[in-house]
Amino acid sequence: MSTPTIKHVRAFTLTGRGADYHDQETGHWIDDHISTPLGRYPEYRQSRQSFGINVLGTLVVEIEATDGTVGFSVTTGGEIGAFIVEKHLARFLEGAKVTDIEKIWDQMFHATLFYGRKGIVLNTISGIDLALWDLLGKIRQEPVHQLLGGAVRDELQFYATGSRPDLAKDMGFIGGKMPLQYGPNEGEEGLRKNLEHLAEMREKVGTDFWLMFDCWMSLDLNYATRLAKGAAEFGLKWIEEALAPDDYWGYAALRKNVPNGMLVTTGEHEATRWGFRMLLEMGCCDIIQPDVGWCGGITELIKISALADAHNAMVVPHGSSVYSYHFVITRTNSPFAEFLNMSPKADEIVPMFSPQLIGEPVPINGRMRASVLDKPGFGVELNTALKLNRPYAR
Ligand SMILES: [Mg+2]
Image 1: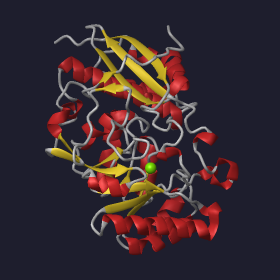
Image 2: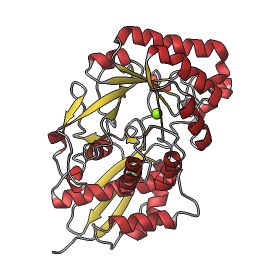
Image 3: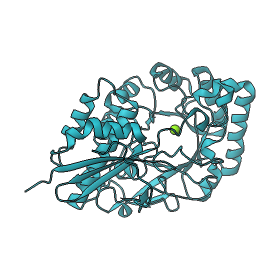
C-alpha cells in the first residue's frame, strides 16, 4: 500500500469573525460588559476588544499531499501562528508520510519547548494537527470520527453559550451559559446584579433547563465561592473558569467550597496532557473544557480525554465547531457539546466559525445527527472567497 507524503505546508491569516470568534463587530454580545481579569482597570471594563482580545485573527493551515489532496484547519493564531508554521514547523511535515501524525506532533512539541508549552504555540501545533487529520480523512475518504474509533451515539446534544439562555431554550438546547457581567472590582453591587440576572433568567427558563456562568478567569476564590453559594438557590449547574488558569490550588479549594451538586469547570485556556494532568490530579474540576484548536489538537485530546476518563471527569470541549463534534461523538465521557452562539444578539443559529468554513453543520433543535458528520475529513471546505493573506510564503 503506497501512502502519500506531504508535499507542501502553507499558513494563511484571516480577520473578521470565524475561528477568532472574538473578532466581531461593535454591539455583539461577546464584547459587551463582561467580567475579565482586566476588570481591575475601569478603562478596560466595558469591552474586551479594548484590551486587544481580537488582535490575533485566524490562522489557516493548509497541507498538500503528493496525491494532490489538501487538508486544512482554522484556529486562533493569526500572523504569529503563520510565522511558526512556515519558519519553524513545516520542516517536520514536508516529506513525511501523511500517516506520521503522532511522530509529527511529538517533534513539533519538543522542537518548540524552548519557547512554547502553552498559548499560541500550542494553538499553532493544534492547527497543524487538525489539518493532518483532515488530510488523512480526505485521502481515506472517511470522516475523522471514524478514524477515531467511530461514533458511540446517534446524535450530539448541545448547550448554547450566549447572552440569551431563554432564547436558547426555545431553540431546543439543553442549557444556556452566560458570560458573567460583573467582577470583584465592581463590589457588592456587582455581585448582587450578577445574582439578579441569574434569578431573572431562571424565572424565564423554568426549573429543568441548565444555567451556567462563564467567569473567564476573572474572579478570586472568595468572590467565586460567594457567587456559587448565592447562585445555588437559582440552580446554577456549573461555574466556569472562575480563576486564573495557573491557579490550580484555587480551583481545588473552589471545588470543595461550592454547594453540593454544583459543578466546577475549566480548561479552555489549558493545553497538553501535562496541563490537564495538573487539573485532574489536583481535583480542580468536574468537567474539563479543552479547546480542540488550542489544547494540542485531536492527537493530544485523545490523551487528555483518556486521562480525564480515569479521573471520572467529563470532557466537554470549548467551542471548536467541527473539530469538537467529530471528537465528542466518539467518547462516552463527552456526553454533550457546546455550541457558541455567534449571532450578535444570540437570537439565531449561525455556524460557529462563519464565514470561514463551507458546509459547517449547526445543531437543529439543539441536536445534530451523527450522519451529518459522515463526510471525509472534518467534512468542511475553506471559504476561498475570503481574503487570505500568506505573510511568510516560501
Ligand atoms: Mg468559557
